[in-house]
Figure: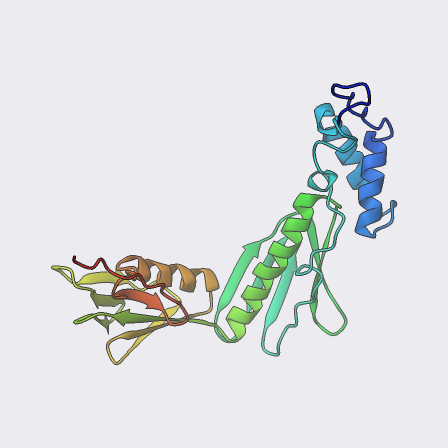
Length: 251
C-alpha cells in the first residue's frame, strides 16, 4: 500500500485481541456447541498448544484452532448399530465378542469411547473426552463394531474377474490355483473362515464373515496380476473401472 507522501505505508499491526482464549472461544462458537461441553478440549488445547501457534502477522491465527480441538460430533459414530435376531453381543469393558450364525468375532476397541446397549437392543457408542483423537476413534470404533455385527449375521462377499486369454482359476481343497499368463500357475492358500467359488473359470467369489480377511485375500489375488491400462488384462474387482490408455502409434 502506497502512502500519500510516497513510498510504502506501514502494514497494520496484529490485532491484540487474538489471544489463546479468544481464538478457542471463537472456534467453539462457530462449531455450534456450548463452551461447557468443550471445556475439557479448550483446557487441553490451551495447555498443549505451542506459543508460536497463536502468533499472527495480519490479525489471524497462524494455526487453525480446529486442529487443536474437535468439538463436532462424528457423523458415523453417533449412529446406533442395529443388532439383528440371532446375533449375541457380549460387552466386557472395551472387549467385545459378537457371535452369530456365520461365526464369532472378538475385538478390543479404544478406551476413548464407551459402548452401551439401548432398551431396543441397539448398540450406541459415546466418546469419553472431547478431543480430535476421540472423535476419530468414535467413528472408527462404530464402523468396526458394525462390520462385526453384519459379518456374523450375513457375511461379506468380494468378486474378482480374470480378464485375458488363457486366464482361469480353480479351487482344489483349501488352495486357489490361478493361471495368469506366467510360466507356472499361482497357488494361494485360502484363509480360514473364507469360502471361495469359481464361476465359468474367470469369476472368483470370496465370501466370509470377517470383512478384513475377505478384503485382504481379494487384494492378494488382484496383486498377482493387476489390470494393465492398454488392453485391460489382469485381475480386477467386479465393480472396478480400469482407465484405458491409447497405445503408441507408429509413424
